[in-house]
Length: 306
Image (cartoon, rainbow, N blue to C red; front, side, top):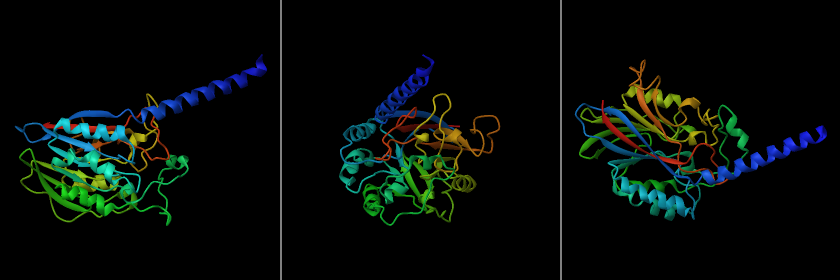
């Protein structure tokens, strides 16, 4: 009897692993809307609804994701911010344009992520457990038509914040914004200048929340920074959270609303912090189409008076 115990243990472990993988495949399609209230506006302001999209990694044929994205227009956001990695296939433009069409009618702004420039490629998943999972670009890696993507957004009136400053008007209020191109590819070059002095909100936007970018945006005067890239860890441990962030951000802030560099501004010790929201994103690489304890998400941030 004792001799069969290891075999039984291995069998149970294999069944558990199989069940976990099956659930992770299902969870990758359980699209979830997160809602947070952030007290960042000046006193007396009415609430401002900001829809944060990130890491769609859209490919042709993802009809459930496309339909869910289109339904987000029913939220009637005052402002849409897209923090990159929109697609994962060279032929995804028609699907992406259809998915975002209702949202492109609202004021918006965007930055690019690495997978807006380059299609994902098969790689060893264990690389993501390294402190920095980046590797040199491959000459064989498929280039994506990033200029066409930028044109889709700018033709709709969205502001390109890739190493740029810009302003937009949302619900009659002036929003001053600064953004950088993808820090994960070391494309970030923080732009010169200052936030608009009459802005109701000073917003920072980046794809990957590297500490150097967050520090610079805080020093520049941003009150709220939006980023993505982390996938919330993608494979999280229930009760523990993310194991990795794929950048130098700590795992405790892999997703959700937090303060930077310290606690949230409304918490003790957070007087010198700014607000930050990191989206866990809506997609995955087509080569790792799984999520565990980390559902795909978009976020509606309701900004209210301090």
